Structures are given as structure tokens and as C-alpha cells.
Length: 268
Image 1 (cartoon, one colour):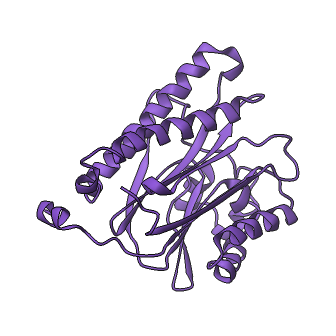
Image 2 (cartoon, rainbow, N blue to C red; image 1 turned 135 degrees about the vertical axis):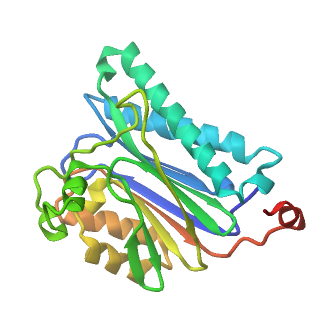
């Protein structure tokens, strides 16, 4: 099942201006209609191990499901696609935890993750931690994930404003991560897509350096050139300090999926 005629993908990852190594990982799979972005954390090299392992495990699990003979029929059902994502991220959580227990150098490692999976006229977004997803539609940019972080909990409780939150010293304290606990709490939502939509997945290395208006301006100006848009986003984050690794993935809806007769027959 190919999505290459329906979606356009681009992605870049950069070490930034301060860190010595890149613990972010991006994985693009246009032929199966999904993308993964993971932002690792831990001791020396452990964050990179966690994010790489997480992305590879999720990608392998999703490919197995999507490339099965019944995928064209079942993918249209968001509950089944969500189940696949939940199982893939849950298995990645287990694998990261096992690796940490078996190697003292990896103790305490973990990673955030955000995954976008396309099926029919929908895009399913799953995330754990503070890596984000945004949607640009008709010149309007909307953040479609909510950070799993201490700061977001304070914002939700009315203890701090969105404006003041930009300067908070606890920006990077997350409340969920892959590999942090035996059970991982995964948030999954399904979004109806429209032709021309552009979806952004990013690590906090981008969202901490650029505010909403800055991200919106760059995406609005360069949405027709995804590779260039990725580079402009990363360059701008670096120009504002580049305090962390910076990763971005862009997905453009170039055409809406046309269901086959078989899929219509199985529609509920």
C-alpha cells in the first residue's frame, strides 16, 4: 500500500549550537505513510540509544502491520490504527527498559516520541512527552498535541500564563517518557485532513527556541518547499541560541485518499 502519491515528506535533524551530540532521531516512511520523531535523554550516549531504539522498534512494528494483505481494508478504521500505534509504542517502551536494566551505562535512559500515521482522509498522531505536532491549514497554525510536562500541568491549572511559560526554568521537566516506567501512558488522537494541510512534528529544541508566531511565519512562507522549510526552521532555532538538538518533520497532504470499492464494501 503506497502513500507516495498522497503525501509529501521532509525531515531534518541538527545537533544545535550547544550540545556535543545529537540524541534526536527522525524516521520517515513515505511508502507506508508514517513518520516518527524521538528526543532521547539519559547519560553519555544513552539518550541516543533510547531514541534510536524507540524509533526503530515502532517503525518495524508499523511496517509489519501496514504491509499485511488486509491493511488497505483495516487502516480506514481509526480504532485499529490506534491499536497498532499503542502496541508499537508499548513494545518500544519495554525494549528501552530492558536495555537499561541490562546495561548500567543506560540506566535511567528514556525518550519522548511523536508519531504521525496516515490512513485514508485521516492522520493519527500519537505522542509521549513534549515533542510536538502542529497543523498548518488555510494559513492558520494550530498545535495539535499537548506537552506531557510539569509546565503544561501548571498552565492547565491556571498557575502560570502561556506567555510567562516561555521563560520558565522548568520547561524541560516531562511527566511521561518511553522507557521511564513499566507502563507508558500514550496519547493518541485522530485528525481529519484536508488537501494542502502541512503537519509539523518537532522536538523541544525547536519549540523552546521559536515561539508560535515565528514557527507560523516560517511555515506560511515556505510550506510549498518542505525541505527548504525544514532548513529554515532549524537555522532560525540555531540563530536564537540552538540550546538543544533540533529536529523537524513536515508532512504535506497533496491529495485525499480515494477509497477502493473493496474498502467501501467493508465500511461501517
